[in-house]
Amino acid sequence: MELQKFLLEPGPGSDNKHQLVADRFTVPDRWRDVVDGKNILIVDDTWTTGSSAQGAAIAVKGAGASSVTVLCVDRWLRHDWEDHRTLIDTLDNPYDPLICPVVGRVCSRSADFRLTRV
Image (cartoon, rainbow, N blue to C red; front, top):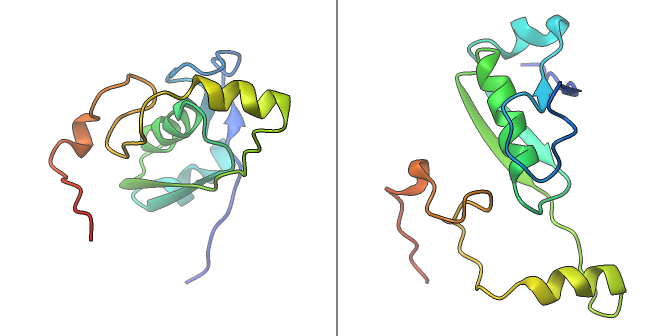
């Protein structure tokens, strides 16, 4: 099976940074048949609020994707870099993978999951 790769295009809502908007991205017409009924993997190279990844998921689901998985490739933060320090210093809650970074509460889809530490 051949892996189909494509880029989403900015949608009308692409100017709404760090906010979840349904029209942040759009699936180009030439890729809609590739998306329809398929399981889609979105690779996101930045993760701050999660709104871009969620916006991308909304776009491919709207184009007919059967399921969507998001893989976030994180970045290395350095406290000695001022712009990184500013972000790091605002983080006052421990990381919880079940908390939606956009709305700040348990995501409805993750409500049935429980974390087990091994």
